[in-house]
Amino acid sequence: MRRKFAGNFGIRMERITRIKALPISIFIILFQSTFCGAVWAFNKFAAEETIIIHKKQNGREITVKTGNSIRIELPEIGSAGYRWYIDHFNSQYLELISEETGEISEEGKIGAPVMHRWLFKAKKVGQTEIKMDYYRQWEGLEKSREHFFIKINIIKNGR
Image (cartoon, rainbow, N blue to C red):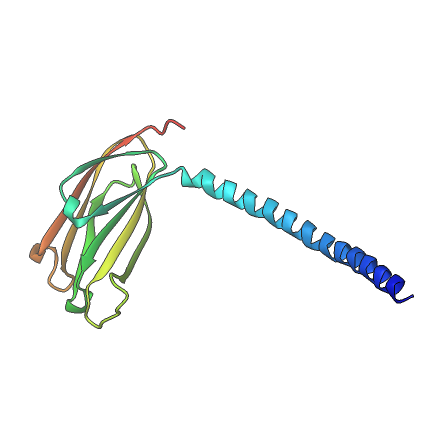
């Protein structure tokens, strides 16, 4: 009798496990379908490149495709009042998407240099440029300590 009970219990447990596992399996399938869809949508946009420009590329000429992004990263010492300011860019060819300032390192020291970042999107085929100046706002543009310039050739995106 005991063996029979153990056998029935084992079978019963197996059935319960299968029933409990069914909703979990359905959840995993739905989650994967949803997640894969999100990954696919993300990858659709990931085809758009972001070109990152640093201070050492000052004066250079770059080529980007329409729809691609250009991120300019320039260090500044905001604690001394020095900041980078956009002097010129043609909004017919480029769209300023965002501008932010963040720490360069994770140390978070007071007075440490920070990284100023601008994100532009190439809108239209043609040639344009971005000019920036590094100065204290209260001293004005004429007392700029540095200048940054980049020439941009925008070509048609062949997607």
